[in-house]
Length: 241
Image (cartoon, rainbow, N blue to C red; front, side, top):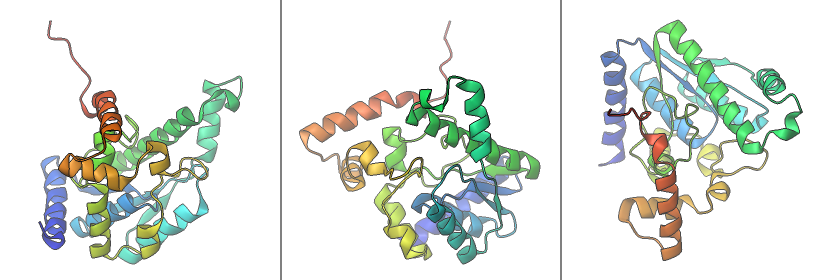
């Protein structure tokens, strides 16, 4: 499907999801990254008067905030900024009395993402909006998202697009080039990048998801990730007894 038709279809789909739930509009986190920027541009088209972008820095890179505001300005998206640094500190103080050093980087990163989910649902409940997530097919397939964090949303409009397709959509929507060109990162700690954490490139992952082609070793590692993260993509199991 050509990019223009796909964009129009996703805008219509977002409207339909909100209408079917009796919502008034959409709220989403704006991280300054590629996926959230594309989701924000689509949401703004779907709900010109009822779209809220929320910036939620939590010991984040200043560049992330600059890029998020760049997108908000480009598409005239109303925003709220909620700084979560002190909230994370307070929660870690309660959960880890022996000190922050006892908390692993991944555990701390997941706390950041879940605090953002709580923040988004606060605004969603206040406004009668639906929460839009920005995970793409490449992330969903490999479980590269936080359960009940960035995975805790009402809809995922980019969920069938691999990373390369999201980048193509970004160019069509006129997302600022610095956002399209920078290395993908969740911004969870200094220097963190998606591909370094995954252990393979998005290009390799996308090729595997679209065509099934990959080297024997990579196919084995990807298969293991997909299997290990299956629980993230399913509702909580209920016994049939």
